[in-house]
Amino acid sequence: MSSPPTSGNIMHLFATRVLQKAWPDTDTLNEGLRRVILDRKSANPSTKRTNVGGWQSTHDLLKWQAPEIAELGKMIHNAFGEVMESELGTSAFQCSLSATAWANVNTDGDYNRIHTHSENHLSGVYYVTMGEPDPARDPNGAFEFLDPRGAAAASSIPGVPVVTGGLVSPVPGMMIVFPSWLAHGVLPFFGKGERISIAFNLRVNSLNLDQGASS
Image 1 (tube, one colour):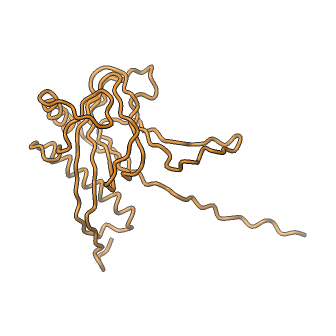
Image 2 (cartoon, helix red, strand yellow; image 1 turned 30 degrees about the horizontal axis):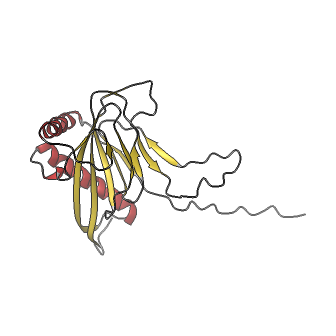
């Protein structure tokens, strides 16, 4: 009598960590951020990078003098700590971190082309307002990740769906943090009002584990 086949070990390779965090009780913060950003927009022209239409601020947002900006800076550093604890397996570390951020205001038809953030380690986005999306458009203004495995869809198995990207439908108070090399973009927003977000880049200049410290 033959023995049954031995079960193999399925490895899940090349996982990419992406933090999706819903911050609680952000209504007051978001209203303050909206006011600060729209004041800047009324007095300054847009920069041009990946944005098609819309308005983008200069990349010095974290230096703007407003309590809401200071609070956002703390939230970004908190999220960075969560990501690094997941990577390192401990929260006992010290590092030197550089951070930049900028505001985006999209209205009907505006979007951001697929891109990466070179010379950074982590990137992210925080959502302030979503405007009034047209419910007949789906997806509408979603955040899009591209599958970094370039040949993943080259030869698909019949009946097995191939995933070549991921969409996140944002809400106010949501923050997403991901590796800066991961290609991403923003689908066109269709609707009324302003879709306001704050993007940021983080670069780790040095990092040291606290030897002997508990995690």
